[in-house]
Length: 117
Image (cartoon, rainbow, N blue to C red; front, side, top):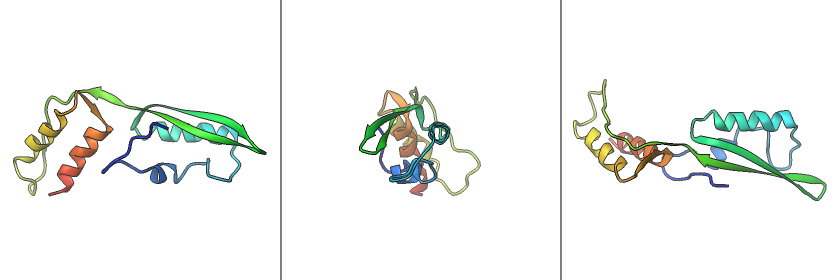
């Protein structure tokens, strides 16, 4: 729930690929704790919680994400690249300034601009 999505952002499938919690599989409390730590350690989220609810003979696990938010981007610089045009930093900064805060979406937009060259 509340999982950020869009171009340049890992998909739900990519994030959940290596987790202990998988559909139809048993998971221990330790396994669930490892999954929460793994998701949080991606750096994409301020917080990750799990809501565990009984259903039938088992349980449903729903992950709740709170997106990480940083102050708005004030500057952007590219160093060490000889193939990117000089205008790429201005292009990234202009896109970032469309948002009051720097979020995963803003960082993904910057990544997509740079990878577009």
